[in-house]
Length: 205
Image (cartoon, rainbow, N blue to C red; front, side, top):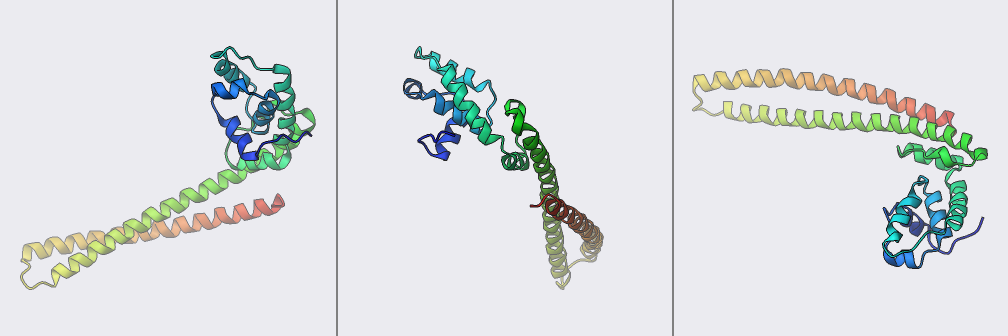
């Protein structure tokens, strides 16, 4: 494969642009642009965006050079290991244009990546829920402590004392409910984490 004279970062910045600037259109190396789009897994419609941008200065893409570069870029994009990474990021596979000899392996690894992404997303959601429950637990504990401090004051009226005791009882009940939910969430997260570890091991990762 031909080595193109610009950085990997440059490749992905170029491929991620919605269009090209007038200066880029004037100095375009369409083989490089095609390679960048292919290596980033951009759809075939990306050339239409480039053509639309360059039409503003009456410049036209070199389709032969672009398509040749894009095919080389797709060979790089469609490697199995990249398929796993793309799937794990939750990005679209864009595998329709992959060369036939690498498409099946790319998609297989992509699906594995998506499976891992789903498990990791489930863990992240459970962790977020657990943190919310911990914040709620702390809020209730702080309020219970405030009530206890107020109850220790000598000038608290009987009516106010009764109101505070009732509120504290409700808070204690809810605190226990929150604690139960935390235990259940932790148990569920342990199960998902174990499932993730097993699947990664089965995939050899």
